[in-house]
Structure formats: structure tokens, C-alpha cells
Image (cartoon, rainbow, N blue to C red; front, top):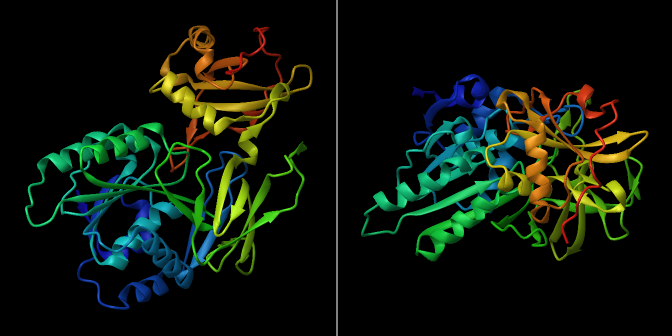
Length: 390
């Protein structure tokens, strides 16, 4: 494993390999801000999952504010940071900044495909969905190997970048029931906005998010998105903050930006997130949240590499298709039959399953589909009308 100097970690973290570590314990007061100033600006590019990728740059002041805001949410009582989040994303880079601000060791393990060797007594773990394949075993090993009579071990697990896997919430709840000191914190934000809100782990979609103090959330009055009418109580999210990035083609930071997120129920510094505008579709007249459907499909077909995508066909109208990575060798007919047999466990059965596309993955572990495959001109096979869960 490579040990990286602090200045190098802050300047070129995205090029340092899949496993490396940096010890920030020797940083002097004010040194982090000095190092960030020498880096000048850092750019973070959106995944391109639902639209064309856009790069948002941040200067030293904004990065320092991002680190301070994140520490305010997560607390400062940690003795090590472990991250499975690629540093080329803002969320992954902030994990480095948090370790530097707290002056504690940092270790990176891309996507957490191995068990993390958690040490110390109060580690902070930054996670994304792929890392939950190994995190339950990592956390179990940590608590079972600790024997510190003076202070009980405690772990804080952070999640962002995609919908929280059910396994994450179930793992944390099970450990809490056994008396383990473990906290799960979900962060909501984006490459353009930075962190906007937070809440403890929950798989309940209606649980409100607490907006961080330096952010003003404004409901956008736009009544339709991509030609689809929005419900009266649902609005696009507009974020006002000094931490909003600068589009690389613009001369100055935006200060305010409207995202593709849909919100409702704002009250006393909280909000409810309905989903992504690009992932909330209405095939056949009923709303379907594709992010929620993805979670159901992962439980029904564990280990499958796939993406659900809306297809706007001129003859068949808008419908949902399941595109499975061709490298898995799965049979489209068998998968579709399995989904129809278990239609009561998912919101909607995709009208078609394809296994002839090689999928691309973003640094955050999100599946991307090339534009050519987003709108397929061929007419789908005449499958039966999709079943819907009650």
C-alpha cells in the first residue's frame, strides 16, 4: 500500500491508485488552508447518468467551507477516516478534507471491494453502494476485535451519492440492537451544490432531511420537467449557498443552482426528497421512481449489473426497459420471466430486458448508458402489459 504526502493527496488524489493512505496528524494550524490555496481550484464532474457530464470547480475558500460544513454534520470525535469513495468525486475529495481538518489518518480503498482494516477506537467510514458488499463483515470484525475497557469503540458510517441500500440500514440497526455504538449518516448533495442536507440512516422515503445551516433551499415554481407535468405539491430543488461550484465555462460561481431533484414538505429547516426528475417517470399513467425500482431489483436479482431506463417509443409510448451488462452472460428471457414471477415485489415489471449492451460505470459506481442506447428505435417484443405491485 502506498503512503502519500499530504500535499500530494490534496493535489492529485484521483491519480494515486486503488489503495493508499495519508497521515494528517502532523498538520499545523492553518496548513490545510495554505495547501488548498496552492492547489488553486479543483474540478468535479457529474456522473453523466441522467444528463451530459458537467464539471464544477471550487476554490480554496469553498473547499475549506465544504470541509467545515461536513465536520459540523458528522462531529469531530473521530480518530481515523476510511473512504471507499473515489476522490475524483466531490464526496470522495471531502473525505480527504475531513481527515485533514481533524488531523487524523486517512485510508482510501476504491469501492471497498475488500474488508477494511479498521483501527483506532472511533473510525469514520465514507461509503457508496458497492462497498456494502463487504462493509457488514468489516464492521462485525471491528467490533468483535475491540477490547478497550476505558472506552467503548464507536463507528460512524457515512453514505451519499445514491439511494441508501436497504442492507446498510439493516446492518446498522442490527448492530445497534446488539449494543454496538454505530451511527449511520446519510448526506444529500451533488457535484454542483456540495452537501445540502443530512439524516440518520433510514429506508423510509418519507423521512425528512435536515438542511445544513449555510444552505437556503428554495422550491422552484417550474410546473413541468422534460415535458412531464409535476404534481402540485412537488417542486424542483433550488440551492442557494456560498459553496455552490462554478461551471468551468462560467466566469464566477453560481451561488444558486436548480438541480434535477424533486422536493416537497419543506418545514422549519427540513425537506422531503421525492426523487430525481429524470428518474421519476409516468409510463401508462402511473408514477414510478426508477431509483426505488433499482433498489427492489437489486434485492430480487443480487449481483446483477444493470440500469433501468425509460424509452420514449413513438408507437408503444413511454415504457421502462432493463438493460443488463452483456459481460454477465445472463439470458434476457430467463431474467424477464423471473421478474414476472415476482412482480408483487417490484413497482413495475420492465416491458423489455436487454443483455446486448456493455455498461459504463461512473467513479461513484453509478451505471451509465451511452446516448445511443437511451432511445432505442426498435419496437420492443410484444410482452404482456406490465404488472404493478399493489
